[in-house]
Length: 418
Image 1: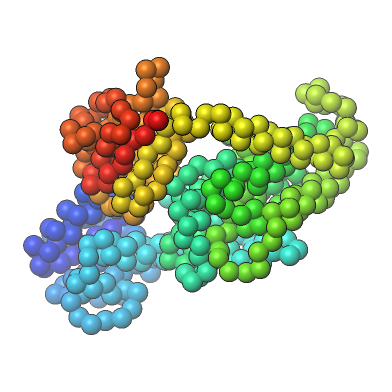
Image 2 (image 1 turned 90 degrees about the horizontal axis):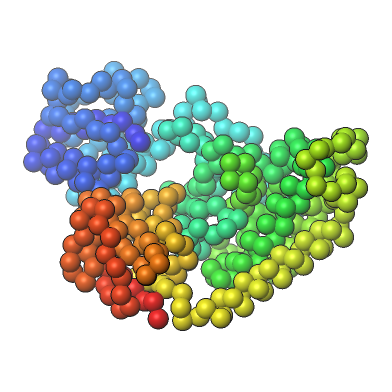
C-alpha cells in the first residue's frame, strides 16, 4: 500500500476522486486530501507520492527527493508526471499507481540483485528483483507487443500447480518470491542424501507441472529452465517455475523442456559433493548411492507421466459431474476444482481472478463445497453478491442449483453442476 496526498482546489472533483479510490482501490492507497498544504492533516514527508491540481501553487523542490510528484491537470501535457483529469477515474488510478511504482522501483535504498544469466538456448529476459511493502518480487521486462494475453489470463486467474501466479502491467511480468530461494541456492545448501532426495522430488514435480500445461492452453517450452530463476517455497514444500507468456520466438516441442529438466537434474546432483553425500543422515530414507542417477530420474519422469495419465482418466470418468461456472461477459468456463474456491480481483489470493472489473472486491465471494452441494458465500464485498437476483448478507451461505445465476457486483456467472 502506498501513502499519498492529493491537493486540489476543485473540491467537487477532489471529492469524486477520493470517493472512487476509497470505494474501489482502498487496498492500494492510504490517502490524505485537501485544497492546500495548510489544510492537509497528513505528514507529507511520510508519503510515497503527492498529487497536485492545476490551481495548487507548489515548489516540488521543497519535498524530499524520494517522494514522487504528480500533477492532476486539465492542460495538454505529455509526461509521466502529468495526469489528465479528462480520462476515466480508473485510468487516473492506474497512472497514479504507475508513478508510485516507478518511484519505488528506482529507490536506491532497495538494491537490485545481480541479473541471472540465461540457460543455454533460452532468451535473455531482462529481469530485476525489487522489494515493495515488505514483499519481494521478480520482474521480467516484456514488451506489450510480445505478450500472449491468453496466457496472462490463465496465469493470473488460475492456481496452476508448479507455476507462479503472474501479473503483467507497465511492460513488466511480476511474480512474488517473498521468503523463497532459487533452486540453484537450494541445491548448494542441501548437499546431503536427504537433500538429494528432496531435490529429485522437486524435479519430478517440475516434470508433472510441464506435462499438465496443455489443460490450460499453455506450452512447456515457455517455462524457465535456469535453476537461478526457479524458486523453492520451503514453507509449502513446493517448487515454482516462472512461465514467460510471449507469443513470438521459435516454438519448441514440450519434449525439449523435459530434456532440459533431465540435464538440470544431472548438473545439480553432480554439483553436490561426494564427500557430503557419504555423511550419514538419519532422516534419509535410502542409501546415498541410490540418489542422483539418470536412471532414477528416468523412473521419476515415467512416474510423473503415469500419474498425469491416471489423472486424465479420472477426469474423464467424472466428466459431467465436476461443477463449473460460465462468465457471461466473456463466455469463459471456470472449473470449480477446490472445496473452497475463492473469487475476487486479488490475483495473489483468489482461485479465479476478475482483474478487469474494478467493481469486484479483492476477496469478493467463495464457492464452498458441502456434503449436500455447493454454496456461495459473500465475504463482505463492497458491491454485494447475488444469487438469481437476491442479495446475500455478509457471510450468508446460499445454495447453488444447476443453472442459477451468480452475480458479483455487476459481473454475472452461471453455475453448472450437470
